[in-house]
Image 1 (cartoon, rainbow, N blue to C red):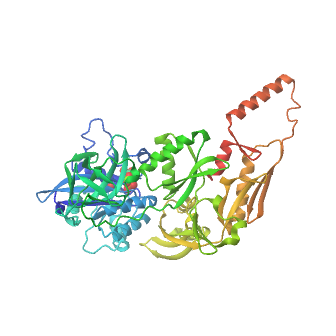
Image 2 (cartoon, rainbow, N blue to C red):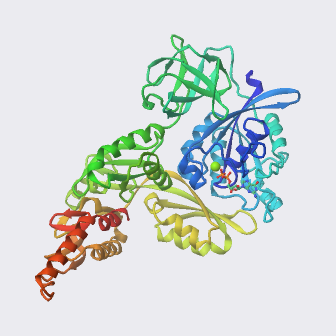
Image 3 (cartoon, rainbow, N blue to C red):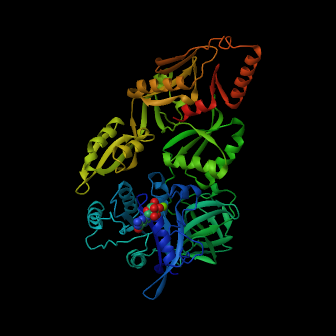
Length: 606
Ligand code: GDP
Ligand code: MG
């Protein structure tokens, strides 16, 4: 296929607007995969063939972008279409931007019953920034609640779609309008501007680890061609390889003799580890001169959490599982750390809370490793006297009261949030953002009934409950997206929690000074609730800036609790029972205070 007969496109949309369903239909209509009705024993239409991970199928979301090639005949000629399915959730914007870099056009799906949502706008801007040609598509027109006319109006207004650009209407579920969409892709989307005659150059835009064949590299061939047996080199690492297999994803790997300019496919190079496969890297024929491709910004961790084995004897198992999982998800950053309370563990960096959640679930389901994740923190910037800067991603390392004299400024990461919601929730939405230390930038009407509002918010404020509150305050109607906008000075303090005067490192947190008092009361109360009475008094304290700002006590057990019991025999039995109970309930010791493991974990996680 010469470049003019190739189309590389991605499908982008707000979550649940039908990307994966449309991908299924496109693959079926082009005969790339069998249609469920013709496949024996098949029941439903929703195959979601590109959602390969267990967590994706369970949660019904796409986490990892996937690629599939298909053939379509148009105007008497065959075309090669390479579809790149993408995740819709904000946490996976990094996956989206990689996919966009390998395509020339995008289908931007909008659910005709939901209208434009926060990620519709975000993905539209991402595609624009990558100079892609965008075809907006109204999906789910079969739904009784669909209102394609008014949704089309707001799509045209918000997304600045040219007057003469037709907006196709489809039902990805029923297949209606999908065949015509294939023709439109060929007509409207540009072919890659690749040169077959130049020497080989390709962009590495994704990779994964396969147990049988090792590291698989997904590449967009920019110029020339690459075939089995070719000697190629990586511009990023300088390492050299012999190509052992090339092919396309259809949607499973299908080996070919060569990949040509303009095509998207995979290379197997016998890499020893996925760390050799750097997303954004340029491959070229060894010995040739090469203009290195621009590549991508590396993924930036937006939040960090301490990760420890539930049972400290399982550290090796957890370590192995994290290692294997990060081979396939290089956007997770990993560092070792040790906690006095929890022992050996890791500090992992994630792109967002969903990303963190998905990672934890995959650790458990795919690798059988159960882990404790401490509550997440954002990276703080500490500017010391003399100007040296440091990024801190662990509250236990945040400058304490005593070190403050050496610190000039403390900054926290900020985001610009975009909220879209029906006008009747304006009051609630402003209140929500205000409660989370937000500053309004502006708001306008998106259509007759809905508002699009922008706020500056501290990233740390949107990590935990913000999304749930947003959903519940708006009866589920509000959607939200954000962009990272850098650091801003903030009056942040570290709160330490002490049990009988001994600080518990994993319970330290970083807070805005205005929130410290409330938070200290909550955590000391919660600890009091879960600490069993012991033979001595337990004092629980929260400390900020060298001052104790909250205090609770768990009074001592009276020694003679069993004295009133009858015979020695029964006492012995009771003691035995007590012992058995203790044995089942694993205990953690913090200084001289004993705490059931379960109780301890419930506090660490919050
Ligand atoms: P994604 O998150 O964008 O990949 O969305 P999915 O493809 O997973 O679809 C989300 C939900 O919408 C699924 O339950 C689909 O069955 C449903 N859906 C997708 N397209 C249509 C459509 O055209 N009509 C109807 N009625 N439902 C659809
Ligand atoms: Mg999907």
